[in-house]
Length: 314
Ligand code: PSU
Ligand code: MN
Image (cartoon, rainbow, N blue to C red; front, side):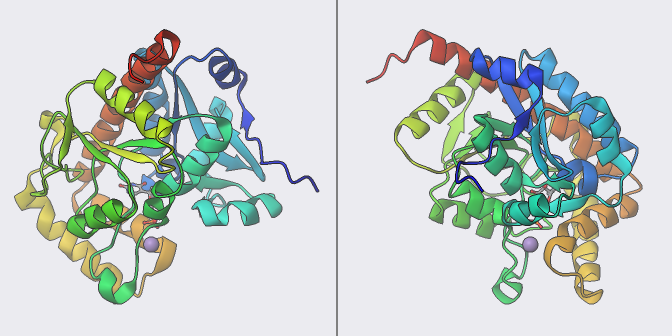
């Protein structure tokens, strides 16, 4: 067996764009396989790809398909991930076993970062990342998304983290992991369904160009860590905190009582929230993912332009 790093299989379009230095945005697939119900998951996956294109970049949805790491999926594969219940959820530690077993998996943020890095894709858009769970001091439940961010140089655009997680602890953990947190157009870290969390972010940037430059400098410093770009949900799609806070607390309590642990916790909470809000949370989720795809594409386009012009710094 070769000792060479794995090379993900790229769609022709993604391979061409990367070879020519054009803008490419990676997209995750656990959001399709485990984050949203069918058929909204598939509709959203298609809309997100269209949104990336609309803003001038090439979408590269990442997944493990029959044991192969792939970046850039055809529509039939996307459709399969929409309703195939044999597709599992893989974080980065699971990838080798999924490959060896010739299995198919939706890739979480951590796994998508790892595959994007191997494919040479520097930026990735998702809805929300995993984080430090509430009561992590007893459960030790901290998402591998955070440790991967501390290890892999992919920039991740998200809408902050949901309050199914402990937002304050998540931000502390990101600081420990040396992950810059950039808030786009706001001084506050957003809370997924809400534009505000009550937690301030030191680094506010207001343009995709400024974010692209910061990403490029962070890489050139040899930091070796990712960056988190937090993009608040559009005002008109945001949920009322008074309405959602209690529901989140109920879902978290239900997960605890039902003995749900490990990788099942997040999918359980997402599904319960959707049921308990009669689809309102799903609508907001779709709106914020699209908004993140647009921003990631604009950053990728600015980054590609910056590379071709060369940096004015050092
Ligand atoms: N948060 C969401 N939607 C999602 C996820 C998180 O609002 O779909 C998915 C992402 O793929 C994320 C993963 O990387 O859940 C985190 O899982 P865990 O908490 O088990 O680390
Ligand atoms: Mn976990």
